[in-house]
Every structure is written in structure tokens, then in C-alpha cells.
Length: 165
Image (cartoon, rainbow, N blue to C red; front, side):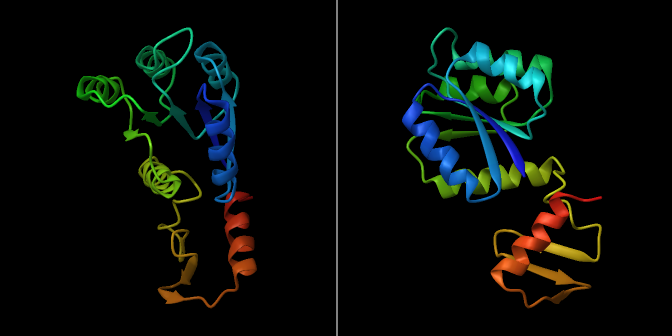
């Protein structure tokens, strides 16, 4: 399962996103304050973070800077702030992507999957094996031949890859 840390002070939005991402084998731990988020990422191995910029206690751009200083975890900025300078500063501080609010949650899924592929997340790094899994199409192929799988069979195969060993 993909582990995601999210710092978002809008509790309702955080709950909706966490529920939506759970449908894609993503477990979200939400933090409402930057301090709790920064402490949480020290104590847990997350695959990716989603950071809002307008936060209590500390500006989200400062959170980005502190996160990048402490670890190399990929992160996406998700913010209603649309000022170009915020976007540029966020990317300069190490953000892997910037997603302006409001957005379709399916776009967030696509961006997460793309970033995790680029960072060689085990769930997406199947190209070295004879078995290839494409989560977007919910399909799998073996030695280049498409496998005919039911949805349940695909989910079981995906789960096995998540729990290698």
C-alpha cells in the first residue's frame, strides 16, 4: 500500500481526499498543522507528501524547505494560492509538482502515480520483470502477452507485488 502524508488544515477536504485515495491503494495520514506533519514524517516512512501552502503556524513554503532539508521524499504542493511566485518558490524548494485547487481528484492520482514511477516505487517498478502491471488500465502482461484477469485477480496480483517476499 502506498503511504501518503498530507498536511491540510481543511479537515473536510483532507477526509474526502483520504477516502478517495484509499480506493487506489493509498493510505493517507493527515496532519492539520505543519509542526505535526514535520514530526510525523520523521517517525514514519511515507512514499509521498501532499502539502497545502496556506497553513496555521507556518507558511507552506517554509514547510517545503524544512521537508527537503530533512529528507528526499517526493512531494506535491496542493494549494489555492495561484501566484506565480508561490509556484516557482515551491518548485525551487524541491516540490515534484504543483497542483492548483480546485482540481479533479483523478488528476491528483495521475500525478502521484507519475511521481512514484519516477522515484522507482516498488508498486510501479515492474518493468525489469517479465510481468508488467499497468494500474491505470488495470491490466497485466507476461512476456509481452496480455493476461486475461478478472478485477479480483488483478487486485490479488497487485497486492502480491506490494507485499514482495
